[in-house]
Length: 409
Image 1 (cartoon, rainbow, N blue to C red):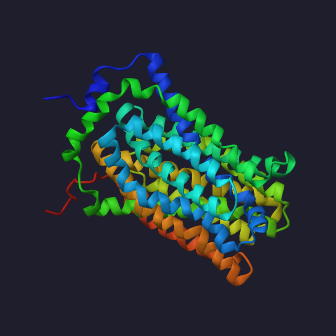
Image 2 (cartoon, rainbow, N blue to C red):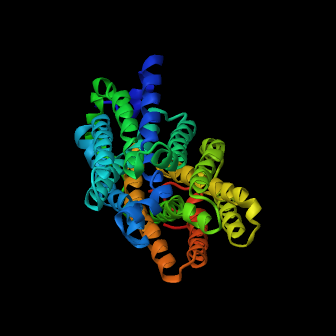
């Protein structure tokens, strides 16, 4: 009988240099999973004016990657079993760079085409990374998920902040400001390529696929999925439309972009710490409640609070969004028994979840077009946050997918 990949990684640990190379590869891959999307939000108005499109169509620029996430996420675990996780991740980050360049090549056609390509590439990385971390760092999953989340959010924050200065101050326009993120994809490609030479044993995962539970028939799997989707909806709406919301309250375009960037930068510590705390607690119900409370406080502050405290409200929203994402990533490991279930749950949650999230930016853009203001869209976000709380509490209880529910036969 062949030893499992997980057992092999435990009994034959890599040298320190190989472990650090793996960690750097994970970090650079993670930096590509938000920056190409968060860089769009501060430039939406510029793109819309240049191409002559509506707010609803502008919202589609952020929605299309989410649709791509939904379509390819269930396939990602199968691709990993067939071709090996390192190769699939390497090809994905290469396609991501190509998509970033195509997005800025010409007009609305290439903008949408490139957006779909980079969305498909990101979806594969999104699904496989939590499972990879569970496999390679079984005793440090919380720490590595925290590092993964911080890397992703840091790059996303920088992208939000520099988009307008690069587009206007450096004179590159919105196309150049979006195209520069292909350099980040190239860097990740170079740092991840060495993993191919030493990870051929990943092919053994195909022999273990019968160990995976059918997560689609699990109520707990659906709780995790709906939590993942709804918190993602809130995040992508915020990174797409928060700059416009702030500009409607008198803030300049440059300041609104940097405020979005500061929001993401200021919550990096909590984004790092939250997975570690979640991994050490018996259940995550209390963390779910606290996380959503911060979102209520932040949105309520923007709606009814003082404009002088805008930065405080925005930070509260950021704390909520950063924490909820970290918790969602941890749930893939905490609610599953092995790396195969983790990959399947990640694929399910990110497929259905991102299809649900894809509704957000376009719907909020439509609500804004319909009413001419932001009050109704923000009430919509409050309603979604209530659902995040409900499903978060259900997903936060200490159970495993495939484990019998106490009291039921």
